[in-house]
Length: 402
Image (tube, rainbow, N blue to C red; front, side, top):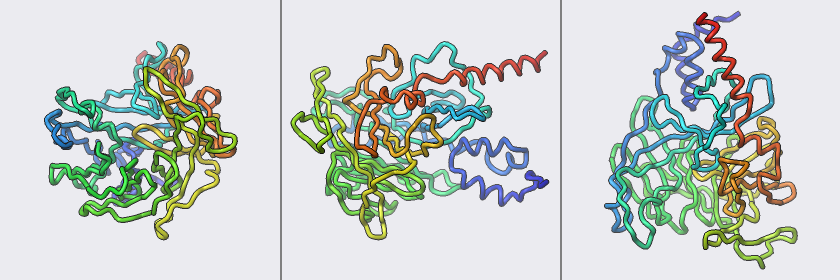
């Protein structure tokens, strides 16, 4: 039998570079002492504070931002098909917060039996995606037509490290004006990219490059040294909000159609209505279209089916998975947060407010997550096996102590 501890250091370093996820690196280092010594003990720490991204006359409303990273994990017990989907944020080393995988809301209140410490080495773990969020530092409220600056930076942020040995990085986000904004740690300042035929909807890091899509579906590659993004795909128009999603190594553009008009009929079988809560009219999602990017032809090609794939559209992160990896989920579906579906929170607890909708590409229907009982278990409540496995670990430790 081969002795894996004797692999050359150069090969171990090359393997580690391809893992991507800091969690996978942690498991890599846990194999043996030679593997552990082949790479640094901790991944590069995130920067602490950023200068304020100016927005036409209200630049004094915040002194800066700090950046946090959140990772979406699919967790399951060994030798079982059961799965749980959760987002984890580490605000300080060693202290984690659990969040709704498709929103910014914390998982709270957690069940009393929920473990205080999780030994993730006891579970099957898959890293589905990550997101970065800018948080205001020393925010001073300012009343203005835009409703204050507190919500200016609730858009998606993507992060790129510049080299394996370098601590330099680049951020790309969407400015409140709809333009792209880039921060380079070398320059220590934000730059507004003025190319904007239409306001941008989403940004993503895909295969080492920044991509952005606007409201028409026009998709661009955003270079680090240019204020003129290069065209990756021409517009498709159609819906109201575009999302970028990676699936099986391909970049997809998902087009969300919204409506508040009861009289509009997108398709013969679509039911369109409106909801009014707290004096505001909320848009309802009525359908989706999915496109695959053909960068060589600079066009988006509509997909009729996702096959076994399931797409997830969150507030700050999009990701995909195979239905065979998920517990009780049907393939060829899209899970998304929706303003129309609301829950009371009396039974669901943590999912009070905006609920999750499910779009089935097979028949073009949309329904709340509550209509899919098996899929609901993927989100809430936390599974019983999570606590039982952790209790087993605690019992083993107590036995060793005796």
